[in-house]
Image (cartoon, rainbow, N blue to C red; front, side):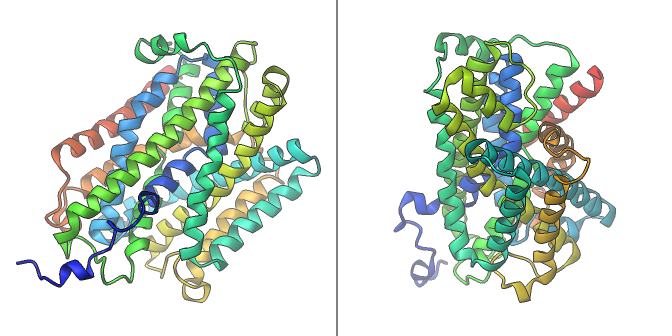
Length: 428
């Protein structure tokens, strides 16, 4: 029987503005459009025009489903993806997945920082390497020394910078009549370049670090709050919490894919039409836009790279730290003070430092932008398989198993990712 005092102790979500209810899902979706993603969508638009627009329409329900599943795992169990792997699966599986995640995230961090430095150099001049160091240092200092309760709203407001890409789309000439045919009747090319781009688009849209981040942020937002225990131990608020998670996730993923589609369409309508088909970096895409689409589109595009990078780099470093921290059993979480989670914050600093260093070595992190998305596509498959297996375990989900429709979408998302990776391997 429900305790009459439960209503007084329940999370007061109904009294909050809708924007206040948006959190992990919104920031996760926005961080998906990081400089690596911008480079991927720019290259897809420049090389194939509107020919890959269908991938962003197809991926929307799939990424929304898998992100909701990751959030449910965190909110129900009270542990993130790595924490549940550590508790219920063999160590080699745990270490392999966490290791692959950290490698992919570190490459992504280095590439994103390089793109941010190049974008700021385009806007104001000066030395790009210095900007890389400053961006990396600012990201680490913010994550380590700013209270999470203040830092999380800052991440949320940074999502607004992505509207720059929607504005850019309306600053160029788009033949809107061509888009429906490319989306609903796409012409498939059976070659390596085409499948590489598909894997890259899906890899940057459905990325492993997003699963880890959203699950951990659900844990973070409830950790230590007696009103929000893990739902597996106190399932009476499950309907309300799952409704909040779905709203947050769907809004975040729709926002993410609208921005991604705007980037692809902008470069298709400008670079592809003018024969510029080889874009390796997001900053190169911005520079190429200047003589074709004008200075306004160039400034919006370049400024958006910096804004989304400021959002994405902390998410990348944080998700790696969460994964390693839970795998090793360390005290972890951005809500903890530095002295309480030294190893956790050490991973944040170390992964960002390696990302900065990549920009000073012969390794070219800028060229790694596109390929980091391909790597994410390969890494996503085993992570998604393990997540779907987790959702069938009563030790993790209690009585709150996935509804049939969400479970089917989760497995469909996993199979689509596997099919794109297999398609790339076959065409190599």
